[in-house]
Length: 388
Ligand SMILES: [Zn+2]
Image (tube, rainbow, N blue to C red; front, side, top):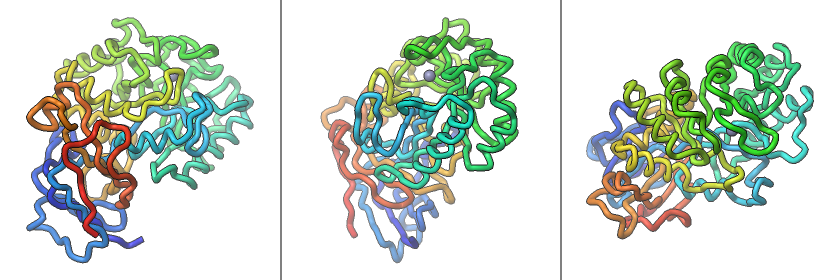
């Protein structure tokens, strides 16, 4: 693929960069699926485009990233017997999904050779097949008692880059978790942990002491999934380490706001990242990331352009992804959106800060248009148009 995409007549460019969330300009150019230029059309080389999109004044942002999902296979989850939940999520502006463990696989192997095999297979089947074009980073094994350093090396050598939620398997104590997470990190694997009370029968409590001792890269659902830790433990987690503070749709919204407010007091809003934790007992949430952004912006008094960064750029940086930031060299993964019809507020940003969802008008992944007017969000006021 050697194709040029030009998106012109953009009303507002959001960057995903929490230190500079808005960029001047009206045009984005991508070649071969990567961003090559962002700025004013009059200053950019827009010649030879295979695809030109007239944004008609809508807002563009890096595609949203869900830091916490539980996929199984393809665009199907047996958890709530849902088909096409990933396609629905794309219609909510999400272009990248990160597995926190393929825990809903019926008959999931818990013996070590079996769990390693499934991690490798899950990594492969989502690498080889992207539902509706969505990037799914999967193959996130749940660690079990008895695993040795060689097991982590074997998985890393085979392409596994993630460790699923610590605590969903038989490892629920700090010392064992720390030993295994250190091995995972040694071989370049990122890790997360189940924080809070049990999610479903079979899972257990993971408190702040265990989270801190395990030392995972991300504090998975710091606001609980569903049951949150007591307030003092959440504050302690924010204050005592530098791990990602992952807030999920599936968790406790009051604890989400406590996390946000604590991170702001610490001047560490760059640590806040978002996930849905779906599919789960509460179902799937195609608009979950947009809903978190609107909730945290409105109830947490965060400017909408900053809250958007929780759902793309912060996660990209935390997870070391090549997407989620509006910058040359990054993947041309975008969501185009506008203030929803009849939503209060003078601008899209004010509308979000009043708690309203924007309307998604288009998504782009690797420079290719993947969806048009969302079937799930409220209808956008203005819609982008493909010119050719
Ligand atoms: Zn969990």
